Amino acid sequence: METEKTTKQALRTRLRAQAKTFEAEYLTRSDAAIEALLFALPEWSAAQSVFLYLSMGTEPETRGIFKRAIAGGKRVGVPRCLGSGVMESRAVATLEGLTPGAFGILEPGETAPLLEAAAFDLVVAPCVAVDRNGFRLGNGGGYYDRFLPQARCPVVCLCRGRLLQPEVPREPFDVPVGIVLTEDGVIRPQDGRAACIL
Image (cartoon, rainbow, N blue to C red):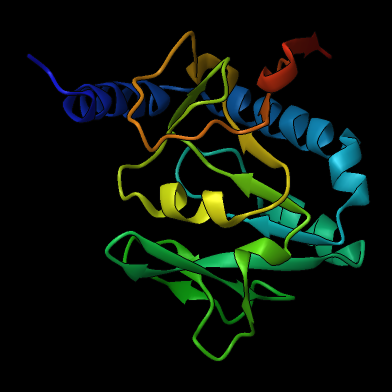
């Protein structure tokens, strides 16, 4: 019998392969729509301090989001992976000087100021996929599973609409996010609201 972990891995492999087939026009249109929806959230407007992942591959693009946050005077923390599923946040004001970490993702060095997860007003999290109940299918390293429970603020997950799932496999430690954004709209699983904005 398949465990949830092996079921997750099979789904992760299938969806990553699917994402590689997405045409450039769709990715560009999806990026623009997700970005616009994020900037329209009251949680974004109210946040003075934002945790933001730096996208890679076919993930929704976040460099424009980073620049908008900095231009708006927000303090921005980005991930620095330490290994064994442990991730910390370091404050950065520019993408210059960041170097690829263990997974090829741009990361700040250890001299960048350390920010605690509890210090953020909003966390923007990545996923391979997410479902309408807010449960993420991550990349399998467990970094966000350990980081997100420490945050005391809204968590928004960015996901391509084509990767939105009816349900993803769950394990006991999985915690849903409060807001899901796709290019098709905003989903707030905890209060049952789903708005198609476009």
